Image (cartoon, rainbow, N blue to C red; front, side, top):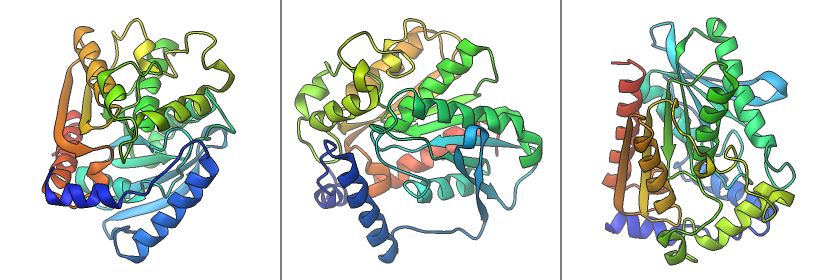
Length: 309
């Protein structure tokens, strides 16, 4: 690992997702400290930010580039947090930068969290926010044919699940899916899951807590829905093109790689970029050259997929 990556990894807070409420409190304090240290930017002069309410009462935050050509593409973004933590502030800096760097409208979704609201509550909110985006496209100056979905970690699972739901329900379909170190498989049988038991960033122990919270009473009784664990889907044909990113020192590494491979096998145009010497969340937590390079690549991929200059 580069020195910057090593330092960032050492500074990661130790989180035990066995107690989601404690993790939420710790992460809220961490965000406040990051903001006070100038590492968490609340605003961007070139982006108009507004909190709104989508269908079914789902809170969303829109990020609209002030200099854009309407109708513009949109990216519906689902934050990470093991399905159990996070809100509209959780990945606010990423959404600000994404809107500025792509020229697309970004819509961040504040979905319901487990364990208080297990599957499918959070996914229902994400799908409602996606369909709402297509319904109010004219109002927001959005090209309904160029709406992507994106997410990191658990948000990657939700983005993948929204594409499956959209295909299966026959409604509006995303034009593209951006999956950053995504959660895809509840079985946790990959080599990376066996290797990274208690690694900072993300690890097997917290994955076990995550799936218990998210699946609730469904865990261990029956085969989970593919909308909860996308790797369980038997047919990935008909999904939108995809970009999948994985990190080397991450328990989720192999299931992300395997999901990308299955997309390829299903005939889905898919780009997989595996970053060696990095950890889960490296692109947002480290000031290393590889972190900046990865984000620049995300934005370039989105611009290309959505027809932006």
